[in-house]
Image (cartoon, rainbow, N blue to C red; front, side, top):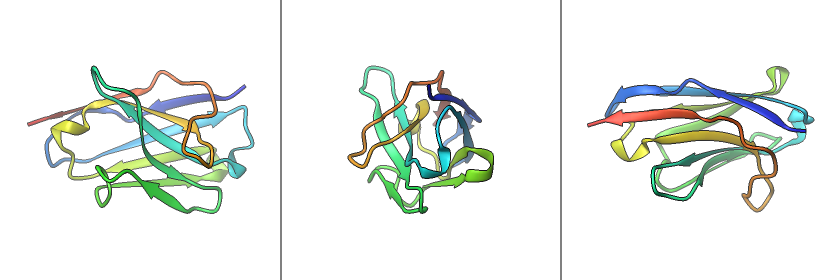
Amino acid sequence: QVHVVESGGGLVQAGGSLRLSCAASGIIFSINTMGWYRQAPGKQRELVARITSSGNTIYADSVKGRFTISRDNAKNTVYLQMNSLKPEDTAVYYCNPTTTWGTPSGSWGQGTQVTVSS
């Protein structure tokens, strides 16, 4: 069973940066596409970035040019570098193995809260 642990969230001013980490276990990490999702209060969870086993990346339009997803297969960890943060980026961020169609395929972790103040 997939187990993920997200970390790195916090409170930051608009324009600031944060780096999120997600450690995964229970899967063959290196062959899985991994995704970062977020859920803001009152909104549905959305996929913001994903990275394939070969390192190809896809971003939601709302974060393109500001967020960078990366992975370290030796550490079974996926990262999300978030720059130029905006108040609308405030959400709980989650990671999950992700299908080719951009849907989550594992169990959800606790997530990590990101709050961007204006």
